[in-house]
Image 1 (cartoon, rainbow, N blue to C red):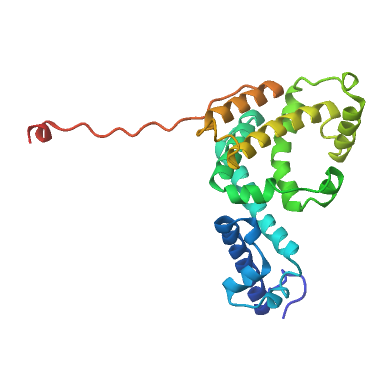
Image 2: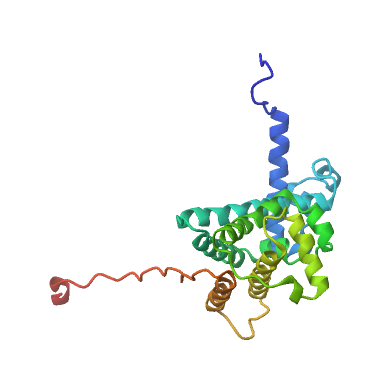
Length: 259
């Protein structure tokens, strides 16, 4: 008999419910990838599961709740990809870790264009509401980048502009944003962080959504140029990606040459 101090056990009914909800999200993702965001509906998921639409509302109360649950899964997968790349880099300094994270983001985005679009290429509420309602998983994604930028700022103090030289409206917005960050970056440093993110995010959207395909069919060199620009803004060294060595075929032996 439990004394109430140990971990709470999950009942069989709860396990079945969690498994059903996980299957719903998996099917929703399949529909997203194969048919696009418009195909992800409660009724479509229900048909794939052999259930009625109303039956699914016992698990997710609305279409929006199902979509947000799917987005949560995608954010968690992406955060895991970024942190794994960061840890695999084995870098002791935030410069190299940041580059590893950026490259992992592009790798995930290119491999999962529909999922990237679901997370980053859909209309969002205005800035304040988005900041207030951003899911915990979404904040975790942003934190992966923010942690490295903050470390660079604390250890190297990258160059920053003067608020007095900015448009007053821009300076005020930066002060407000810095306050929402609990002051981990002053407004001027937050400006550099946002400038880096807009460049990175903008280029990824153009690549993944095929908005620059009329000119480029391989954006990896352009992406690396973007990373070089980010390194200049942050005043950190740029390290080119390590290219895998080509596999050399074994040279024929004298016996094989002689047949």
